[in-house]
Image 1 (cartoon, each protein chain N blue to C red):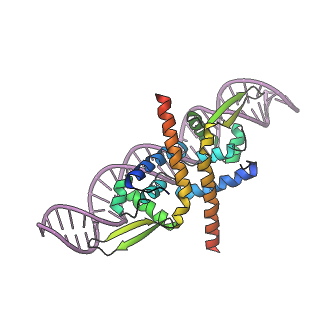
Image 2 (cartoon, rainbow over the protein chains, first blue to last red):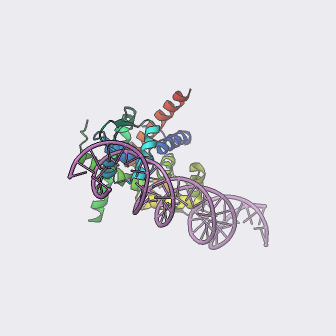
Image 3 (cartoon, rainbow over the protein chains, first blue to last red):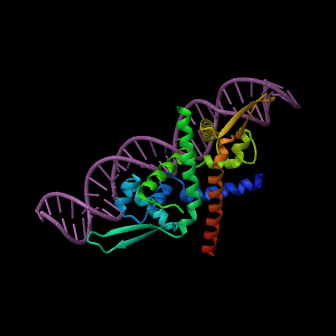
Length: 115
Length: 115
DNA sequence: GTAAGTACTATCCTTTTTGTAACAGATAAC
DNA sequence: GTTATCTGTTACAAAAAGGATAGTACTTAC
């Protein structure tokens, strides 16, 4: 178990800020989570994540810029685009898993507390 | 390794949303991170986290409501208040650790990429 | 009484984020 | 030609978040 000194905490603070800069906000982690079940098209993502096209477009651009999502244009009748997680995005697995687990745990705690 | 089906992803999506509802935003995880080095007073927190009193007050109230931080009023000459992490907040350790690790990793990747 | 320290709160304002609705360009089906 | 699909973009509006500044209330020290 690591000690938590003031200095180690300021480093931790910076690291957490860095992480939040990339995957903070309301949608980034949700989108990554949704994309874990496979590559998806734009409208498909919009429906599954429940996100409007405007925001989706912006979020995907940012994720792509940060190397977490790749964009592939397909030569189909109406041009389709496939969004897919990159290998680098796998480095976020621990974060996602931890947050999923905590979400489950916390919801359970809340529900029990109410009844 | 878990499979990522559409259903498991929608559960994951909900769990992540739940987590973000509690510790999302710019400050919550930073504050928890800072408090890991021990209980702190209001101004102390404000300085160390670099957060203005107005926001700090609001964030602390929310953290307290969600059982992650406890508030203790001390009988000192000028009344002081100590904020401290609760036992329940320890359940966030995995999340914090994962995000710290990723932040380090990502920064390293960026710095190398630039040079 | 003046200043300084603690813990906030109030007010005002700016920035960021999010959402809605409509529309554009391309292609295909009817 | 009209309608539909897919991928977005644009314009506009609303809401949420964040920040700056000052002020309140209490106490101690000078």
